[in-house]
Length: 461
Image (cartoon, rainbow, N blue to C red; front, top):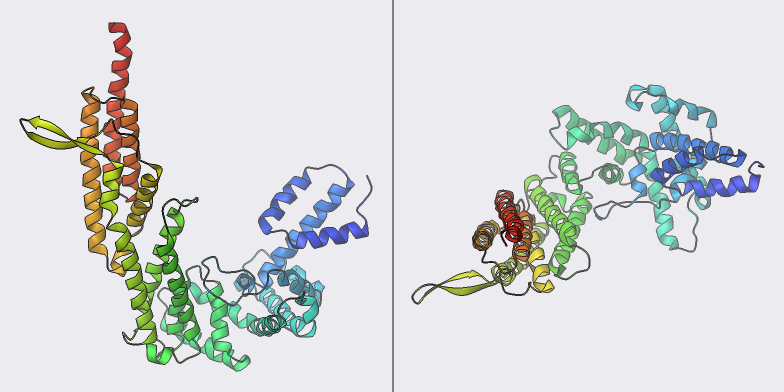
């Protein structure tokens, strides 16, 4: 079979640039098993691309996360992902003989020569952005103002890359328990950044922000960057206020989304609902701990209003939970002695409508999601009361169903036990795991007994 032509190699090279890393690894393994000269040539191209990306990841490490949107949706300074391979190619081609220094197995912080090469390539990247803007970031008919501003930001960020590489080494300690020396280093880093580029301090924090999985932790860096930053009056007037504004804006967006969750949605609302509630609770809690918010200040009012909106939305949904559970577990009055009656499961009733089940699942998911967040939102009393009420209601109803099954009074034992399993899953939604385990154990024993009686019945006949 013929080798790959020059044109084919060019096309394949362009395609490989856009292949995600995880797909590249899978593709490399697949092509390695294929026979033929073209497959061998492609395998070499894939290996070269893998090595090139590893080098790029080392050299551009301080800014690499900025070429994708934050997973949590919080606004941040980012650049188009397509710019990254073009910029790397332009910067690394200046001195290709240095690239092999990036292949050392030692961590970059332990290898001064590798760090020097990586920093040198970042300087070349900043120059490439300014000298070759059309090559690095083609216009492609987009908003030219956004592109121009993005190019300026990209160049300024690469101006700070070498300093950021050193500063990021202390990032884990800075968001936990920094020492006095580490705090002094951070403040010196912010001050030196401001001397290198316009708005260098906030831009350095933008770079660090891109490396934080939990967006609210940026508040700790903001506070550590200045001794006066914990006070809202001073911080709100500073250039660091943008980070607080972003977090509060995302809280408000998620509060609106929490209120919009309705039963009957095609997709399971559970993961998204739990994630939104947990995120809002963690962020509002971090605001309380890190910043001294003025109750009458703009941020203090926004945080309070967000809590009130969440509390109102959640409370309104949860207060109808008791009625929903009554519809999910139909009961009827049965005589006990004389004129006396009691409520017992209506095992002759039809299965609850799908809408009732969906409503119950949503409300119980919401109740379970509040387990660690209710105190932040001010609805812990309501949550604990509902958990207790639902657990007792389900347990009592299940006890009576099990008794009916054991006594042979259930019209359809399989249907009754299936409903018990459904209710056990409901208990798991509110994290009442002990009660759910007890329900399942009793249902299993009742089911085994019912099966044994069914086997004996034909023989007795």
